[in-house]
Length: 213
Image 1 (cartoon, rainbow, N blue to C red):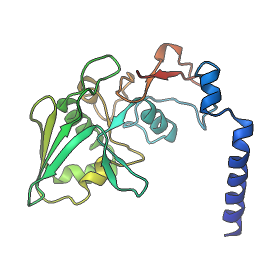
Image 2: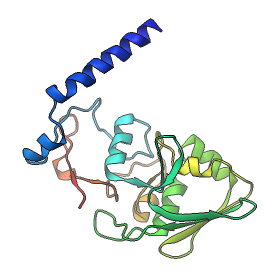
Image 3: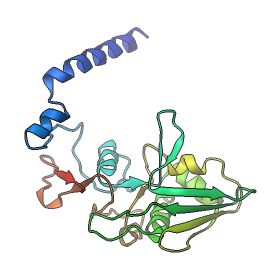
């Protein structure tokens, strides 16, 4: 406990120094809206489903989005999903996507993309594997909605879709999500807040992201 207390005090001290040592958002905007930082590790893989490396998970949160996310109380809240409902027996779940979702290449996000992404995630992630054991079918009803039919109730379905850390169920375009789960995806096209600039990526030296308008 003494070691932990010292660690907490050290972190608190760093936080107090942060406004002095590092420019805040306002300063960053005033100097060209560029933030430079040293990550805790080198980004070696772009595929957050293929690896559990935290740096790739962090990269995933930069470029991808999720169907659900956790709020401050660790309760699942809709993210890409606009609405959802479950049957009385909790065996059929229906999901509708928000309007206006687009991939970084300008193409619309579709339900088929989400179904393929969940299927790939479910082959690598431990919670995803348990989830898939309960799944009977996952079907895109139309471009904006899909259903998940379960063989048996899975009480943690929303928690699984909102899983915070490795492997996080990020949504990828169907053309990428259909890649074998044990083969790395090297195209980082997502729908998240930043676009990965692959042509400026220098492994071991530099990774560049630009804002997704």
